[in-house]
Image 1 (cartoon, rainbow, N blue to C red):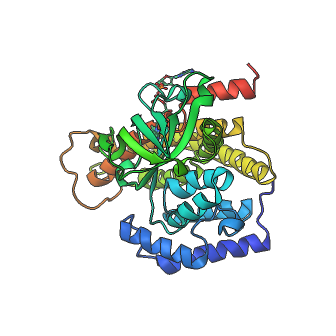
Image 2 (image 1 turned 135 degrees about the vertical axis):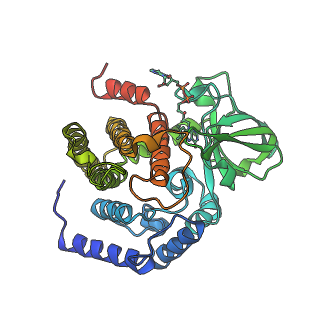
Image 3 (image 1 turned 120 degrees about the horizontal axis):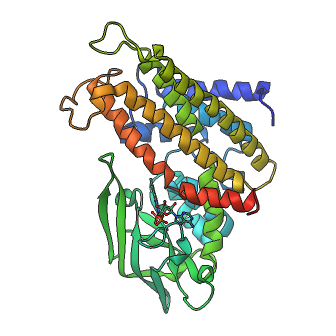
Length: 392
Ligand SMILES: Cc1cc2nc3c(=O)[nH]c(=O)nc-3n(C[C@H](O)[C@H](O)[C@H](O)COP(=O)(O)OP(=O)(O)OC[C@H]3O[C@@H](n4cnc5c(N)ncnc54)[C@H](O)[C@@H]3O)c2cc1C
């Protein structure tokens, strides 16, 4: 692991900054709208950087671990997405590279690269989350089709997705893990129903997805029948490594310093940063964040050198979650009385410490609670660490 960037890496950082400021010049930042997202994606496609984690053989730019790190930090600091396209490029594509047939790669990868096909992940079910192998959505072979019946839950983005990659049960007699099959299902298939679930932050990102005699062509099966667990498992380790939230936390910490250094409305020039208790908690989280950043860097370098992330991905996820949640709690303190859910004045400009700002930050605080569950709960991460690191 090295901490200084080489001349080439520093030059690359300059190129990244130049691209970002060409597409979103100072004063006209990325606004999160679908139009800005599409503009950014087009610029990335033109530059050959749209799918930066893809292997070169599949159109990726062949970046080193250091370049990926620079990309992640620079895009995050500028507030632009590191990758457009959600679960397609980040989660399904690695499965297609490793286990998809040549036909499946040709059929599905172009839509992921061009961001014309959006994917969602159908793993969890009522009664099968932490214990995913308990899943019961059935896929019964009938000639050249599987007939799928069952229910998935907490499916992020299903209401915007064109396809779902899904774990289904094709056998019940063998070991539970051995009877699972990985299917790709068109969300427009007759019998697929998406029902919204509104989360505590007031947003619609989750859904319940039900399958009622949905006919799925056998050619949409990844790899072999009964091997889906093996394909899905590798994916989950990588999902967790990406959940240290370091870039997000760096931005949050910077934002808190600004908010806490702003005069509290209606006070005699009081600022939260002058409260030693508050300042100590913020500094403590910032120190932990620096330590996490080093652990993340070490993991990135080890993975780049060929080792699997293993239990380290659980450590990163657990500590990263802690820090994000601690920082969002400080935001709620900054929001003061405006953090109360009944506060009526929520329109207007998001000035630091004002009501509109407070509403956004409180929503982020509430959303942050879900990080303790998504991608495997805190308790499950602790179990993994106990097994692999402490050998309990
Ligand atoms: C933001 C977010 C996005 C998500 N997106 C998706 C998605 O797109 N697709 C998808 O398929 N799923 C998604 N999920 C679901 C997620 O994977 C599950 O919620 C998670 O795996 C936990 O499962 P569960 O909700 O069934 O809880 P349970 O497994 O029922 O757990 C309940 C509680 O029991 C504890 N527990 C369970 N087993 C053990 C054990 N062995 N030891 C100690 N404690 C234990 C857990 O830690 C938890 O506190 C998402 C979840 C969140 C929060």
